[in-house]
Amino acid sequence: MDYSNLKVALCVSKFNYEHVSVLENSIADALPNHGFQKDNIEKFYVPGALELPFLLSRCCKSKKFHALIAIGAVIRGETYHFEVVSDQSAMGIMNVQLQYDIPIMNAVLTTNNDDETIQRTGTKGIEVVNGLIETLDTLNSIR
Image 1: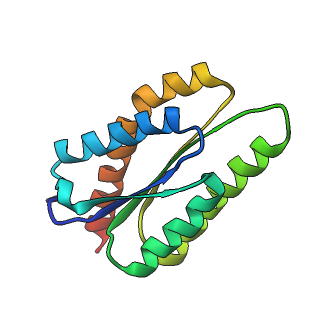
Image 2: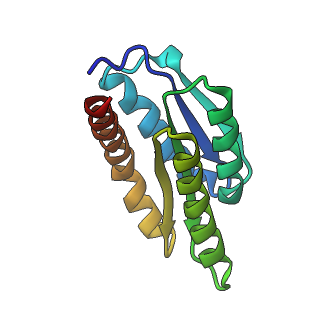
């Protein structure tokens, strides 16, 4: 499949941005290696993971994008807030994807600590781009 004309939005949570930026950059660097054009990749930012579904919804409503990638990092703390943010952001991302029939890759890391986050940011970007390609190819075979 030719990805050169597909437009992709990277929707990025700025919370824990020291980790998120590594993931964001690895995804942005990997997409052109698979034929996506840099000019067709746009980035948008929100404060945290709970704002990602709204941003994704707005991107879908714009009808400008063929695929979206939600990028963030939720690191476990000492309170129940971790579970709320992790669960609700994931559910919101899934709901937007199903509502608008646009593939959304969930690259929101949910980890126990900084060390786990650092380990995951090293590989997750490539995994997400490979997952996007597989999803787009499968969807293309159905149409």
